Length: 316
Image (cartoon, rainbow, N blue to C red):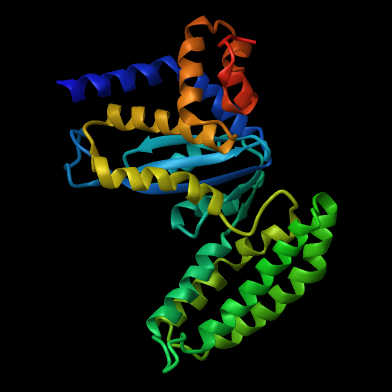
């Protein structure tokens, strides 16, 4: 009974925050970059589905680079329809992994679809791990190691650019001057290797993935407000995947939707440097007084500072 009561509280909270979530979505859509990721979740008592069938939790991260917003959405399938619906009317860069459900983005004239170098790197790391170690305990050197050297060069360029705080057109010029030659050489290497390696081998799959994603992987060198990988979205959804190991499933679609709302509030607060407990306390104390869109917007983590949470709660 206690558990059911707490679940009902969560649902009531999210129902009260519907206007807030709509504003948060608009904030995300207003930015130049949206990063997307998704992860399975088991939902019981879902109409037309067995309890063992996978459903999915999606996360959309975007808005201001300095003050990002994150919106979690529950969907009964992994179909790309979830991303299609969310991105309706959006213009900008969308960064994803190589999941085929994102393929529609390549045909959207108002969207530049960007890939993720972390996923490409992971494929080659799997080859290295499968190759075992030599007598000195170090990974055996091979073709995958050469691919990883190219990728390390790309990330080293990013690290050096960050150290000298390059932004805007200066960062684009730096990437064009230093990263593009590395990318061109890497592409030539991949084109040769794909003809030499069995396509169904781990190395063949890694090379195939990189080549299939290539037109997306190189987008970052032309755009200053993006990073080479989708790690920020992955890091945002990781607390959900860790929590899933403890609570295992949602009892119904309504519960999964409520869970998405709570995670949206907490992860957006964390992304903006706010302590989640104090943010939620501030929000719940002020939410009943919110009347206008401006009142609701002022309650978003993007427009708050830690000092505001420790002071007297009030609507600005």
